[in-house]
Image (cartoon, rainbow, N blue to C red):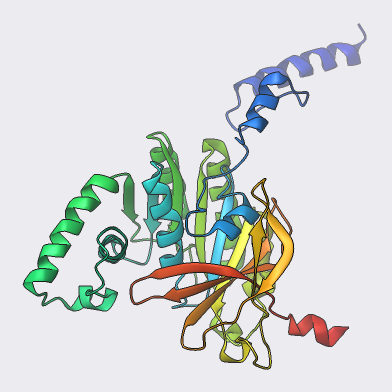
Amino acid sequence: MSNTEVYDFFDYQLNTISINTAKDMKVEDVWFDDAFVDELNKGEAIGLNYGKNCPRLNYLTLGVPLGDLTMLGGFSGTGKTSFVFENMILVMAEAGIKCCIISNEMQVRAYKQLLAVHILTKDLDYWKITRKHLKTGNFTDEQNEMLRKAAKISQEKYKNIKFVKMFDNDTSRVVKTIRKYSKLGFQMFLWDTMKSDDDVSMEMYRQLLVASRKVFQAASRENVAVVCTYQLALYLLNQRYLDANCLSNGKQIKEVFSEMIYIRPLWEDEYTGERYDCKAYTRGKNADGSWEKFTTPITLDKTKKYIVAFLDKTRNDEDKQQVLYETNLTWNNWREVGFCTIRNEHVQTTR
């Protein structure tokens, strides 16, 4: 060998040792065999299913993807936590999936109240206690009896939900929590709410990007699903069409997420027949479970409240779609009614 060949030989050996012993790398072949075909046939590429309450949105995102991040963004008070807890966490927990909530804002009492009203209405068909009433107390004998029944059901059905309170906004602790509980079989994690470690710093958005990458790496390494709630800036409250531009300087984090969903209430001028009619519609299902192209218009009830979910990004279907929900947050009741089309005013004015 020449000097160069000897150097290359030992360099190859050292790099091989380094790669083989590294914990942050994995080398695999791309060719596939019959076992991979069998995996595809079983639908093992599909994420954690939440189609019980959200069949359309679940179909578009193919569930909550394992090994990836999903964002649910919205303005303060729009029901981000309520949506994820009712339509994802509880649905998955009922299916036997272990779920972990990591919260740096809400206390565990708030989630217990959401669970209580869910059990009262869904399991016991009892509607005489609202979310507000659970906070004020002074229950009647009948209400006390129903709440004790609900407590028993919660212990039987929902022991696979764990709550972790974060008193400091420390991303490293979020990562450690994901790594710890993933070893105990937890597959679904809710990070409520995702924000930078220092909201006052001028480098807030750079920290947010670093934080999202760290959590993504943990989700990918442990092959778990992580849903992050994200609060949109209040100065964008009057923006009709929601997309990554609502993230302001933090929109660089879009590259880290697999699925990005934003929610807001339907405005009065977007109801059926109004100036900015959202053109609500529904579709039937094909034999393979996909949604038909043929649409049927829906007339929205102006006495009811609706929430629009904007699917800004997905790696599993066509993005820029909107799914419509009829909601009653008094009991945290959500019903997916169909699709709609919110006009992007900014795009229209630039054409």
